[in-house]
Image (cartoon, rainbow, N blue to C red; front, side, top):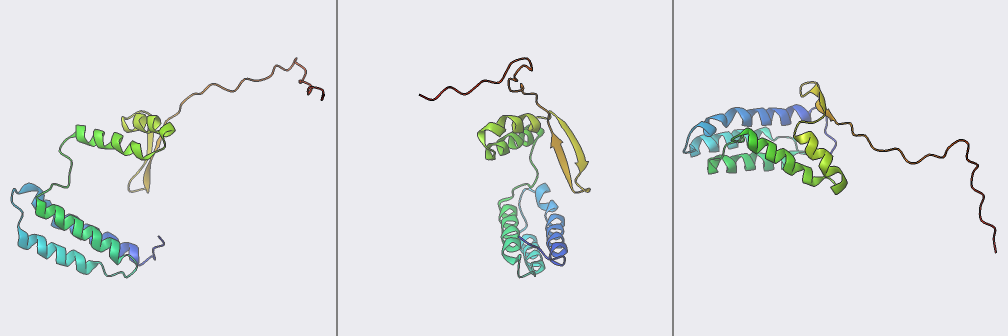
Length: 146
């Protein structure tokens, strides 16, 4: 998806408005339907970009549905966060899942920052080198044709 420079701030604005309007719901047991509807209408109005309007409306609608269910936006424990991180590794090809799971459990190194554009995770594994020919061995001659 190619976003114009004017579209990105609108998406961030809509996301920020949604994030600010829903924390009250995470604290209370019963969601306030009027507050949820007001936040939904405000966030829906912020989805003014025609190019990203469908994505924005889908996200706003999903946040509204979750708020009406009384769902919290934050995981309940660090164990749940770790379990979710390992679960996301299943999206990788089988030969890369083990490395992903090791990184999800904290192995390797992390550099960068979210505000700087992203976190870079790196893990170094050693694999045996392929067998090499000894320099004193002559190359093998092709077998004679029969």
